[in-house]
Amino acid sequence: MSLEAIVWNGKDLKILDQLLLPEKSEYISVKNVEDGWNVIHKMQVRGAPAIAIVGCLSLAAELVDSSHETSEDLSKAVSDKLAHLVTARPTAVNMKKAASELSDLAQTLCADGMKPEELKKKVVDWCAQMLTDDVTTNRKIGDFGAIAIIEKSGKTKVKLLTHCNTGSLATAGYGTALGVVRSLHSKQQLDHIYCTETRPYNQGCRLTAYELVYESMPATLICDNMGAALMNSVKLDAIVVGADRVASNGDTANKIGTYQLAVAALHHDVPFYVCAPTTSIDLNLACGTEIPIEERPQQEMTHIAGVRIAAPGISCWNPGFDITPASLITGGIVTDLGVFKPSELSGKLKNQSL
View 1 (cartoon, rainbow, N blue to C red):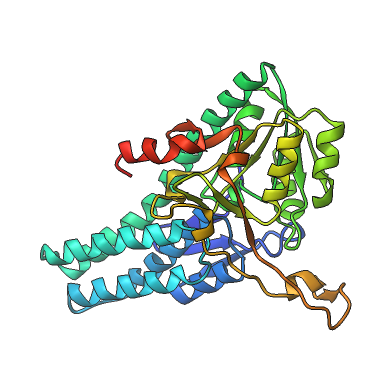
View 2 (view 1 turned 180 degrees about the vertical axis):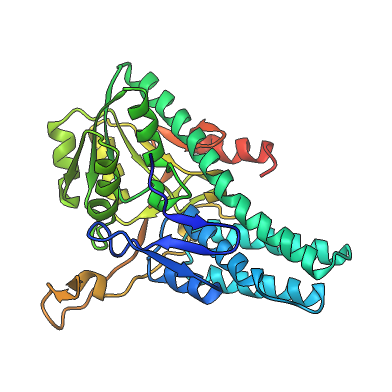
């Protein structure tokens, strides 16, 4: 059974504090939008799908006990609060897309004359539905990716490498790239999964390793600077990573360190797959250079658990993400609609009216 990182009972929201894992499993109550903004910004919850879900559910939690005299007031509050949530972490596009869609819905229902209480219920229900939809989407990604990797490898069992955390802790459940790993494991087609530590925030050794041990998968943790050496000594069948935003041409923003793995994968002839829901694909951006890259605090690099490890006075560069060019995504982009070559992505999605 996968971990439950987001708990919603119709009025109360709790999230598993990922800063405390793996030492402690503690849930935080998120009572309003400001709480939602804070847990997203501080990375107590992270992962593009989870950011959008928690952001929207923090709005739902605030709305449940609120009252508005008019639907116009409610609609404006929804739009303003969603716009604020988008600023918590700008690289991932899922929150921005959800905010736009939900704001449009609220404005449309308001213009149609819906009364405030009914409008509030529609907004809350819309947010809650994101949980169910995300798990369904992830299972599709998992199955599409598993089938593609097995077919390409020509094997009955495969060895994989993944980067950062893309599992139940980054989504409503199951995961994107880790969903592919789960699907393979459930079919007895997973030989071994290697995961990186993912410095400087250590999502791999803290979170991905936690999930792999939790589900008894055959797994090994490696340091971030061991990726190329691993590919040189172990015959990997694929590398699977997630995405926080995918541009129209297939260029992909993902956790810092993804790009160097893709470069090494090309040299070692290892198929490289990006796994993402269609909500992470931004057809409004032509290429990866247009994706905003979040800069994280220097302390994430200089300190571990509050203890300084870097020389005092040294300056730091700490981008949270890097861009992997579409040309390096040799396996394909795995979505809930299927597996596509980066060059096919825009046309395929436009045909789906996304």
